[in-house]
Length: 382
Length: 220
Image (cartoon, rainbow over the protein chains, first blue to last red):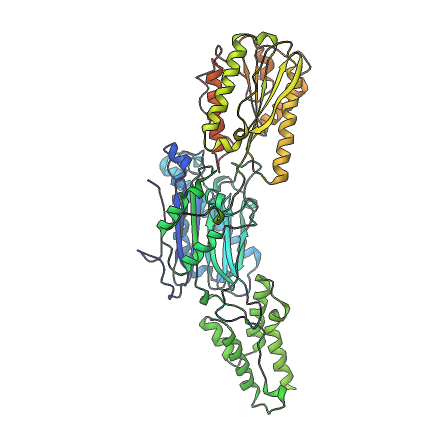
């Protein structure tokens, strides 16, 4: 019987996409055919979860040569999920800010998470009166806030995110299928030989891969063990299987039951020419309407440009701000309030444009959407 | 739900496990020993072909030390591409040093090919089977092999058939040498195929893979 782990913040099913949490999650871990042949248990564990402020996914792959690494993998995913739930808003200075925090702060959190995971293994080994190497495992983790996501990786496996590209032009229909692409995070985490990797108990700070990703254009996340990555991601991380995109879309529409992942892992195509390793996959996806798309170059006629009298700076600023808001497919309430209030428009629009530049290569005209609006405002004041 | 299409997935190359066999085919191996050796090789290939994972992973090569000449009888070739292994005869002296050098060089070339084409690979294997002592210069190549073995860049297993100089064979590997019990070549090659199967199926593990016991073929 395969050992699988999936936990949601709400018992009994996926998160309601209409809730503030927004993210849908699904996860599965199955025993590989090679392990099944030897009557070994599944040594992978995978889990996703979310609440009002956070979403997370955790995957752990137990060492094949360790007798009870399945215990370790299970303990790590469960324990890390609990930690992320408990921390909640304490991660706000990193996850809920539009401006990226200092890298040292991000590193501090990443190493704290790794230390906690190591502690989970140490406690488990102590309780079972075994050496820690008997329960050793790798770790993939991502925790998502309002603005940013922190990810980390110790060992092999793959972490990746799915980004939504901005519309190619202002003429792109609003209901056009958005362009989405995957991007892998970190390196593949293998040593010289195919069966070598790093485990939590022996990892040094240099072995911890981590990073912070702004979420403005991100509509999906996935973490998977190397057994799953065998068929879903190319060895150099440059290509992702089309099927993963299909799964993301199904998850986004809340149409991805866990059994579908189970069946996938045992499909003939998935098992052909395979090492037969355990496979695990954890995914998060959110509906497109929740993803901020930077507006195409706004076609806004300002009264001042046509020689008409200006009612007042505040009124014009509000009109322009409303146009900016309307050009967004959907915005979160706080951002919309900033745009419609007569506040410094540069402060409202520049960070959005800056975020867009940080995450995608936008055409020059779109990247300048924010500042160009501010320039128009300044010209009116003269 | 319809089955997955192969085009829906990524097709990564299988991790490779290169294994060079350095086989003593000198005159002293004539008769029952060479017959048992040939039979063992046949069993090895059959067993590897039956292993679903090893058949796509293992590559075999053979260097012999017969007729006083080290000769590469078989370049490293994937198991699935092999219908049979060369039938070996026995005669002449034992240029073991030259044979091991040929084998190590072939493994290095192969590793470089893996790297340049992005193919993942396991530790390569070097199996040395001999019933005597080298008739040529062997110490420097033994140091090379021993060094790679101790740094875990190579799995080197020297096996001594009755009459072999075990001290010399042990110099080639940081793990020493194993004596073959009688002419249990069949049992040895069955063990070898099982070991290669475990390696081929190993993932995310510590540096060593747990291999089957050598008791069925070794009298150590």
